[in-house]
Length: 263
Image (cartoon, rainbow, N blue to C red):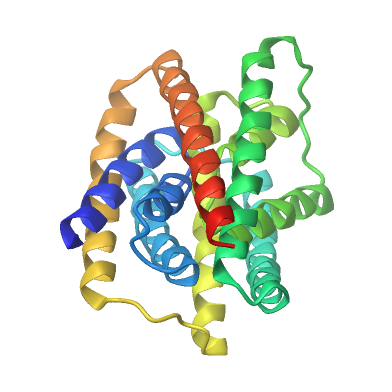
């Protein structure tokens, strides 16, 4: 069972590092699928794993001077993502209190994730026909980051395809540039979310062995994913992204069904 924690986090982080989606969007529904822990624990473990992978990926691209991160727009979005991470964490806590049933919260998360990914897939398929923009206004970038941070933190996914769609549409980035900027934003939101969890004392019960294995898997996945990213062209990255979205929709739909039965 512990090896499965490592394997899921490793595979998710490899794909996450390539596509710029953080890996949490794979880890969260996968752990839900195998019912390996409760909803709060899965969200916490997923967040820690994504944090380790995104930190490595961002630092490594900076050190190697291969970074395509546009600091003028990505930094306000990252700061907004940090604020959104706090708000999303509070929203998650309110949802748990309102439902008083983790299975119900899991159902809401799974349904939201499935719908969000379906929308992302539709946009991606029609991207060539959609006019994009070149936003640079500080407040607009921050507001977009807040929205992304709320979604990521509430769903416990770290980031996700929605990040890439936003970067495509509002900033006219290609998929490889969007991947790097997305990981930069995810890093800030996940770090802030973890700090808030520690400060508020809302850390769920978890196995230290599982956490260590997942963080190691996240780091190794980040290293492997970056090596593959450097050897892949934009078309290959986009194809992988499309396959991943279809898989996420299928898993999220099944998870919503499974949680709804329990409720």
